[in-house]
Image (cartoon, rainbow, N blue to C red; front, side, top):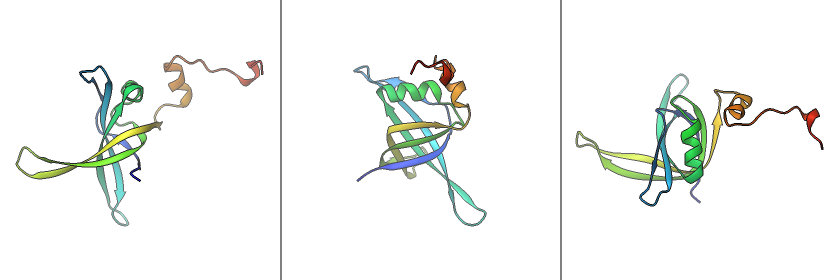
Length: 124
């Protein structure tokens, strides 16, 4: 089974593009802190790809510094950096994204066009 759950902060604003076939795809990078001892931390960086409506939603509501939880599958790809060094990149294909921290749920809902309703006003 290939499944990963990461929680971290975006290192830059997400980028939304479309494939030649018109499918929306959003990419962003998440920094995840890892404890290395009593007082030391190291950041791991995961490149995240979100497709279709999930990608459009991520591009609309995420921004640099925002805390996010991502569930998906992980892969590793190797590449050569500009200085000639061989490097590896951890790439996550998102199946779920949860927006954390930052705005309250009510603020997020209002921006999305939802209006808060008191439970007493509901007819059921």
